[in-house]
Length: 405
Image (tube, rainbow, N blue to C red):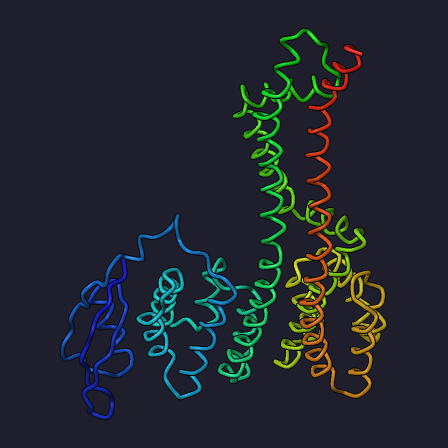
């Protein structure tokens, strides 16, 4: 396991400096120092700080878009100020509050010390760094503008985090309402209904079919509740596994694309991500074919990915981008028109960026409208379920009154 060392060394100008290294042992550390032409004077092992993050594996905290944005911003600031990459990574390692990022930066530092470039060290951590970021860093290293690329990617992931936050925040209320509805229905079926109908069963009055069905369901839930839980968790697990496959994700995205209200909101999310990513890639000098494929992959929507895959061959033949985007049954006409204007005016990158900003604003309003539609819909569904149970409880009473009459 790598150890952190604090060293005093003499550089090529004869000046004594203090540096921090990560190495497996002192022999490897001395080789690192001498490979720079420096002479080590004093080597001390740094005292451990808190929990050993190298031992974390199963319960590592997930790295989100916000964390990637902070990583890019901090690294950009230090590199733009002229700080060497090794020193910048060392500062990130000591100051990062995210344990997974800290552990990753520690491994990257060792990789860079052994001669790897930044993009190569990032490729060793595909679960932490998105492929888009790695491709952009690699492009920045080739063109010599790594700091500018990191600044652009910081902005990109900040906006991506904002979109994700809006979507998750909008779904909180419908999710809570749905759980509450299911809880109320189960409570009424398992506790209220049996108590209410017991007086009729004891008097020998035959129960209606609906009431008897709910009573049987109530008894089944009370006796075999664990089987119902296993079925629910099993179905949830199977659906999640299926959606993670390419064919399952394709079928799911096509289904969503046919739902009238939801289709528009999903299209705006995909359009915003596609246009912003494409603008960022083109501004960094990425070839158009590679930029289109990467931008489509960022949307995670198989309708967009399949559509872009079909038009890339026509791009190679010289066809205009906006005419080909019309074929994809996802992008709004306004976005396609803005791409066409950008191509004709020679400002495609700017138009794509403006389109992304526009659909970001539209997305917020669209999510609010979607929630406004979901709220009354779920209330109506809840009312129908409770009404069905109430009717099932009242039917035996009506039958008894008719018998008495």
